[in-house]
Picture 1 (spheres, rainbow, N blue to C red):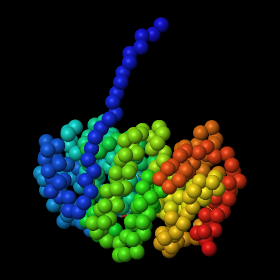
Picture 2 (tube, rainbow, N blue to C red):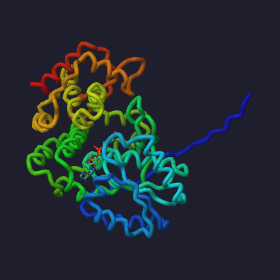
Picture 3 (cartoon, protein in one colour):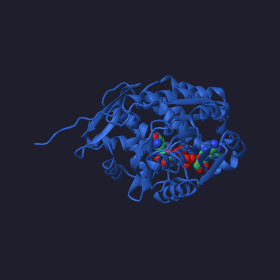
Length: 363
Ligand SMILES: NC(=O)c1ccc[n+]([C@@H]2O[C@H](COP(=O)([O-])OP(=O)(O)OC[C@H]3O[C@@H](n4cnc5c(N)ncnc54)[C@H](O)[C@@H]3O)[C@@H](O)[C@H]2O)c1
């Protein structure tokens, strides 16, 4: 007979997300109260370093010794190879358990910096300074970190929460239009699953020049609040966190079939949300895709025609992480703001949803 020892580990952690413009003073005050170490490592996107060198150096002048590790732009930087190089460099320079790693950039840099922070010395403090719209509203919140593997995206990583997130919208001054539109898909997702008022807010904002005005800060703040509420309810993605994947089961399949990089994640999610909304509509839920119509032309303008067919897309959906016993599970809408998980056994309706959506983007 064996003896059993019960162990209860509380995963509850709290941290603040700062959203606003010119957050340098808040950042320094936070570091002063938190980090005794005079040293910091900054893992930073190469474009951000080039475009915002002054801003970044001023931000970091609180620390006596700062080491910058630059991340070449693009998804291929989320690799074991770069993770290994950074860990080597950091360990060779030397650090203590209290030395922070600060990730400054979009989701690629944040995911990589987070994984470095999670693994070096089994975990050192992490601060995210997201600089893309997508990173501000999505990837910097919730603690998913990791790198890609040749067999798929985000297959190596861990849940590791930052000490704080500083979303300074001043960084968005240099963001290209295509990246605004990419990030906007995640905000539209929050509109669909939690707060439909965001549809109207975005409709007004996107038809003006895309500059980081204060109304964007409000939309970013509301989006960050929605993501953090959902993540708090289900940190390790055992249930409700799956709602954040609205449009993603369709979208990931499209990314996979098109070849990663041929279509951005945000574009794929936008397409996926149209398909998931159509599917919900066919189940007689009172939703249809007119809510997405004001944004359709923006996505179509920057996307190439979709060459994938429904057959191969459905096959690709079967490798989604939500698949259980070979059954595809979709996030659908009961109504706007009311998502649910649905085990999909109607192949014909999946095919119809894809055909409808592909036609919409290719006409
Ligand atoms: N951890 C999560 O929960 C989570 C959630 C969603 C997405 N992601 C990941 O995020 C990644 C995508 O993130 P992304 O869309 O931010 O892409 P990205 O990090 O590749 O950044 C997009 C481009 O914007 C540039 N850039 C960044 N900030 C800029 C600025 N202020 N001005 C000008 N250019 C700037 C970058 O150099 C890059 O060329 C994917 O790897 C995805 O898997 C993670």
